Amino acid sequence: MSKLSFWRTISLVCIFCALEVVSSPAQTFTTLYSFSGGVDGYVPDGTLVQATDGNFYGVTGWGGAYCHDTGELGCGTIFSITPQGQLTTLHSFDNTDGASPSAGLVQAADGSFYGTTYFGGANSAGTVFNMTPGGTLTTLYSFGSVSNDGGFPQAPLVQASDGNFYGTASQGGLYGAGDAGTVFKITPDGTLTNLYNFCSPTNCANGNMPAAGLVQASDGNFYGTTSGGGNGGNYFLGGPRDNYCWGDCGTVFKITPDGELTTLYNFCSQIDCPDGEFPYAGLVQASDGNFYGTTTHGGTSANCFGIGGCGTVFKITPGGTLTTLYSFGSTDGALPEGNLVQATDGNFYGTTLMGGAGPCASGGGWLQGCGTVFEITPAGTLTTLHSFEGNDIDDCYPGGLIQATDGNFYGTTSGGEVDAGTVFRLGVGLSPFVKTSPTSGGAGTPVTITGNNLTGSTSVTFNGTAAAFTVVSDTAINTTVPSGATTGQLQVTTPSGTLTSNVNFQVM
Image 1 (cartoon, rainbow, N blue to C red):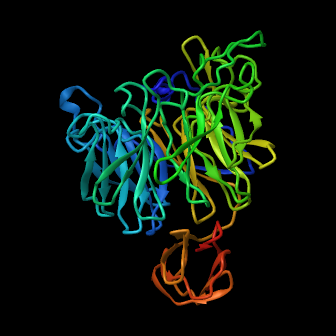
Image 2 (image 1 turned 90 degrees about the vertical axis):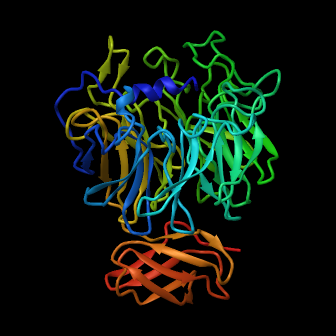
Image 3 (image 1 turned 60 degrees about the horizontal axis):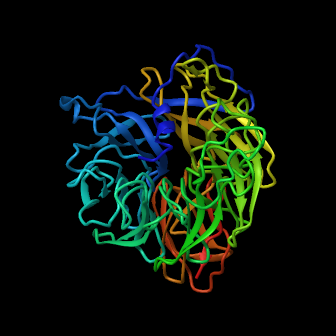
């Protein structure tokens, strides 16, 4: 198990939380659904994905219809939820088809959803699956089928420009069944190729325990993080605080589609780790071409609940130059585990697992705060938008965020009315937009546009070049990249105004 799995376990319990809510007038926070811990699931894990039908899809790590007779808390579920909060359980895992999904889903070009489970499957080492929007699930691959294919994936997949899926397994691979890990490619029909094995027969200087997913960058390569390994480790060399990583503090890496890996940065390369430790979350490539991410520990704060720093936000160039943008200090949040998202205003939004102004505490008070939602500019100015209170209304210990096409942010927490988790919405006044799938392609490439109130749309343009289109529903339009289009924003003219894509469409 990953050394950070302890903090994932912490996120499943919300103890000693007070019953008072303090809301900021600048934001609108709404709990859309509270899980019961029964057949509807227990502890939603991973980041939600907004599908072309306008609804959100996600997973719970426990709960569901199966596994209770073995004394377990359920094998987990896949669910959909409308923006108004109506939840439908689409699938309950029964261990034979996987168990404990801990990563979000990806909706592929074929309209189906693809994902991973951490446990279960034919070899009890996790699976890769696909599921139709109607809930029909197919197990594509069971890890442990061969000796070096890795196991226990806890990160989402990414569908690359070649149509295949790429991901990470947090353990196993060529160099042992322990905390090593792999990068893999899997075709839509389930043929898996091990692209890279972390560690070596002697050490893990190239990283180990990749807990986050990959991002395919504009250069066609994949970028990611390992939560451990590397050759940093300047721990407690006479500085002001203790350190937690003990020499293998994590890395940022680049890997080609063929499996050639380059380590771009080793965390804790500076004395006492002001540059951070344990990048548990993945990266996002921003509009400036750089990558942004978080570390769960480290930074310049003093001991954070006795664990050596509350975490950081960082920027790293494609060439590996890292800048620490912000160090958390407990009252503004602690232990950021979820991915950042760059919103339509150009700023980044994310969550911290703990810390903030909320009253949560555990044990003797050494774990403090119920978590936060924050905004940070590309220059590093951070604003705490919401501190979770740990009560029946807004819960505690949030996961990652997404910005939906209505402009609002949606996410999950691990507690709730019965401490089983919630789905929430946070509005900060950002305008609606449209998104495309895929986000790049040449002339003739089919593109699905997702948005709101699209019925009656009168035009679609790719950076000013008009395209033929068909309105499929109020939330979806089908189109193709027109001849002569150039890279830039996609725009849809609707009866209520013009909607612009959240990212530039890259014309290949």
